Amino acid sequence: MDINTADESALSSVLKPAMASRVVSERAKGNYTTMEEVKARVAGLGDQKIKKLTDAGFIVGAAAVAEPAAAEPAVQEQTAATAAEEEDNEEQDAHQHQHQHEAPAEAARWDANPRNAFPPEFTIVSVRARPSFDHTIARGRVTWHDQTFTQREWALQLGRWEEAYPNITVKTQRGKTVVKSTRHETEAQRGKATADPKNRLFCWEALPRNHDSELPKEIREHFREDSYGNVVSDKATRNSGLCFFDVDHIWPWSRGGRSVQANFEGVQWAANRWPKSDNIVPSLDLEAMQCGLSMAQLKALVAHAKHKAMNKSRGANWTHNLDKLVYWLTHGPSKDHALTNFALDTNRTTDGAALWSFFEAWSKRADAAADVDADVGRKSDGRIDSRALAAAAEDKAQPTVPAPRTLAQPVIHLSTNHSMVECHGPATYQLR
Image 1 (tube, rainbow, N blue to C red):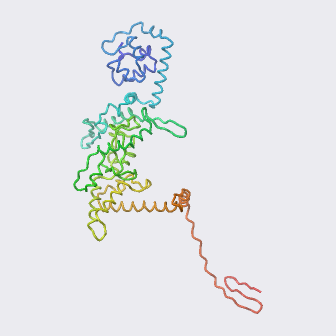
Image 2: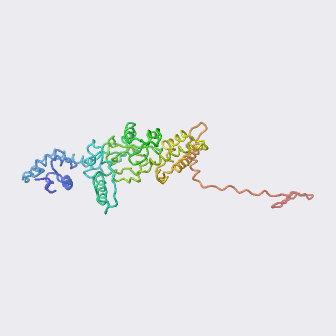
Image 3: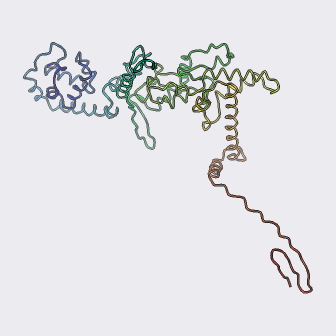
């Protein structure tokens, strides 16, 4: 009997009902071509079950023959050892499905191979391809990786990807710590790979070099654009610096993406941690992803720094201004004052003077806050006093107590009257 035409009851004569149901459900996505394909597509269907199907007369293709009458007796003659082994396999299958949060078979299938950095449905090019939209055509047109969709078709395609490749991370309690992991990696392994200097250098070298002749050599060598239009720098070593970049998983780690260089690219840190998050690239809002400094804004800042250096009355010079600009972009203050959406904060302006004023005001506020915290929380020996910092924070939260009212000094006149002294003021007192 052909597996492509057999109903669930016929398959249940050889397989357990749950496994037979999986075979039929997977077949609904497309007919099988070989028994090897059946084994690959149906989770938990190993060599032993394939052999049982073949022995029972099930094959794939036009050469299928009628089911032999001896199929059912063959099932009845299974040994107790074989049945026990089958039960063990079923338990292993159930554990795998629990790990994948009952993910669709398609996601489970590609993720089972540790050599797949992302689903085989995508290529090294298409996995990072962005859609383009044409709203001048009736019903709209979306182009993605040389494929054309209507807007409705594109929405359905995104929905299919979301369903096929869900979040598959599992949380495990280890003492007081909750550990996240996918099938092949833990969160700690992911963090180690993204912080590896070799992977950071790989991502930096993959970004297009800056050849803009309007920019000085130091800026051209150390500032480049990520694929979303954010300026990043290899000199930014602190992740509160505006131009710091993250080693991003192109295919999200939480959806099974591997921590390998084939799945890495450098992305401005705020864009990676908020708009990108665990979304797949085709579904991203490209305007939201450009939340850092743009190349046009960088050029405007450099031009204003040069203009300030030419104005001798301000006592500025070119080298000093350039060093200040590089510091603003690569170091920045503490995380509490990090610029998480620079494009929104500056309204995407390309006015160099306005941008310079923004950075000066931002830097002064951050420095003032840091000085206050340092003065409050510093001990005589220079160490940080955490209790003083906590008390200062608590004081900030207390309501302001009004100053005590100052009373007017009363005017007192003294007089003597033989046997007594009288004090005349707000009240009269007699002293004998």
